[in-house]
Length: 140
Image (cartoon, rainbow, N blue to C red; front, side, top):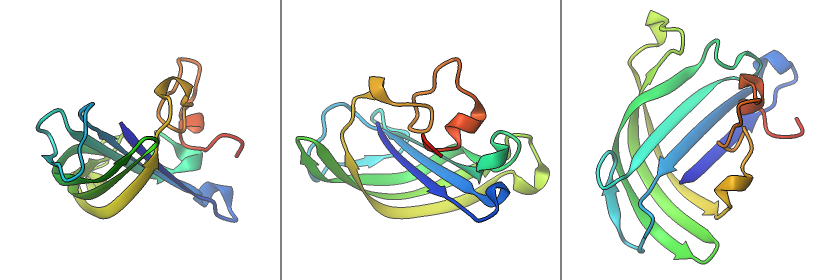
């Protein structure tokens, strides 16, 4: 799994926002491999919203299509090129936010971490964590 987490702090806390991109990949990866999202055990999820109002607004992906390529695999690092389209929906089914597509084309350079050590922000929430903790990096 590759998790990209971005937090944008604003002077007004109500305007701070987050975006989360998560890629689920096969266990064994080789440089040059190309995967179609939704095939070969490869999936992608995207969400974004206001950090102060997590779960009350924003958008999350209902589906993704596209491809990703493995550019580099090192002992503690991976590099991936992603070219994907996500179909977004509102968590509250607000009609003006449903079925909105977003294209994401980027290179992701990620360090390898133990999934057991991830907190709510990184993608490993516990039963006690709130939506607020999932929408804010630790210590913010």
